[in-house]
Image 1 (tube, one colour):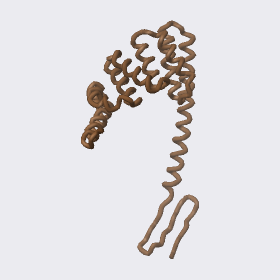
Image 2 (cartoon, helix red, strand yellow):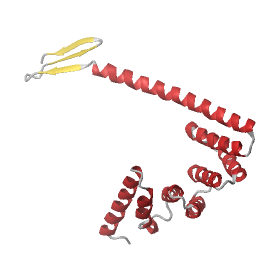
Image 3 (cartoon, one colour):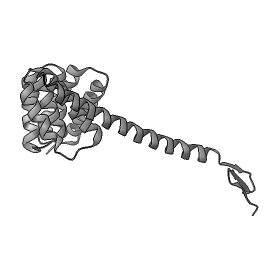
Image 4 (tube, helix red, strand yellow):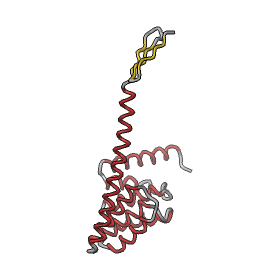
Length: 192
């Protein structure tokens, strides 16, 4: 059983680690998370974060150990498999990276993540001098990114239109609980 004071320390250490990570201090973040790893050994997100940090700190062996721990918890975890493919790429094991990435394509993943997989696939095909497959992968990834950017732009425009519509509404209150609402559709008054 974890005491309240231990729990506070664990949460503070985790918060510090993520702050360090966000500021680009990967080794310090990794050191901070290692202090509390025993409490999160069964947490897939924690395994992924430790694997990612070890990769950023160029400790590929330790990164692979955390990828394995994570995959034991969730064998098809997209983040871990994509990270494994990046490790394989860095180790110049392009053929294995392609196999790993191709297993991800069949998963039902978000379009931007599909684009990540396709970009990584293109990089590996390029290193294997499989230029046609590399070109095709890059082209598919760019198509996805363009389509998703358009969707985001549409959502952004919808959001801005809503904000504009609501910003045109003004409410004038006076001490007698009378109000006048002015918007782009006219005025409504309450004179109770």
